Amino acid sequence: MPFQDPILVSYRQYDVIIIGGGLAGLCSAIELSRAGHQVLVIEKKQYPFHKVCGEYVSKEVLPYLHSLGFDPFALGAANIDRLRISTPSGKNIHAPLDTGGFGLSRYRMDDALQQLACKYGCHMLTQSRVVDVHFQNDFFYVQCANGQIFQSILVIGAWGKRDTLDKRLNRDFINEHTGYLGVKYHIRTDYPVNEIGLDNFPGGYCGISKIEDDLYNMCYLYQRDYAPRFKTIRALEEAMLFQNPVLKHRFKNAEFVFDEPEVINEISFSAKQQVSQHVLLCGDTGGLITPLCGNGMSMAISAAKILSELILTSGILSAVRRDPGTQFKLEQSYQKAWTAQFGRRLFWGRTIQRIFGAPQLSEITILGIHAIPALERWLIRQTHGATIKV
Image 1 (cartoon, one colour):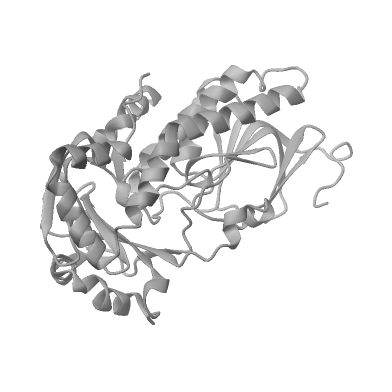
Image 2 (cartoon, one colour):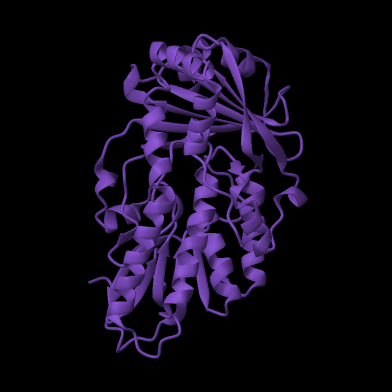
């Protein structure tokens, strides 16, 4: 047991500890802090920072963000209402995005959200990595790498796509070899400011969309088992991405802002549980949609709203004495609500992803679907949710 007997040791206490300060963690922190609860967010990096992400957000969450006091367009977000997809051979199709979205970097968005959380009284502990979570005598004990230990009534896990804590909690997906590699750049280029693009290539696909200032996000996903491994990212791009002439032209004519791209390995899109050892899992930690759907950020924000509202209505944070039945009901309600909200999106995301990256299949399918506008718009709706009412 990693912790000393809590009867003998006094720990700093909080109502809720949130592990991970991304979109899901920060939106939950804002909701719970402004409701008057003591919240601690533990983030292993220092704001602001970059992370691998498509940085496109469906407008379905815009009313909710406004209700939190957050306006992405005040930070320079780009308004996006068109979709373009290119086949591996470079043939383009275009379609409207009924709901639309906005583009804003995580570097700017996360930093603004954490400032908002602090305004509501949330405590932030950055540059600190959680190494263990332990549930004992009706309380959670969260241990950091530097030896600090904190106590709380609830813990929300929002550490992202994968972390050593997934192993600590014995989550099934963490031992799977997926081969998925995610790579992100910020670039300056000549591209429509209101359009998000998805460009297919053998083994993967690459997205591009406008973010703040004069910058564009360019992010791609590649499954490394599709072909022999490459010694460098550049070698991979020249051998695989450049087979699509659209991508080759973009890489050759863009101004790259980063010295090196942001990279993440072994991304898993497998089905995940939203509760593990009583830790409530939110955002990418609870389930990850395929990037081609361009909806992971809005899902994280929406999941935070669902979870924080369930926590507040459960009464678990205000109870004088913890009731195990209340904890169980909260966990069950959250898993049910999460599945109802996102299960369909995840199914269609995984289904569509099987097509993307397979050159001949994606070539035929993309052009075929585009020839039937009603089917095309229906498929787009399957990976988006209804506008959140607040």
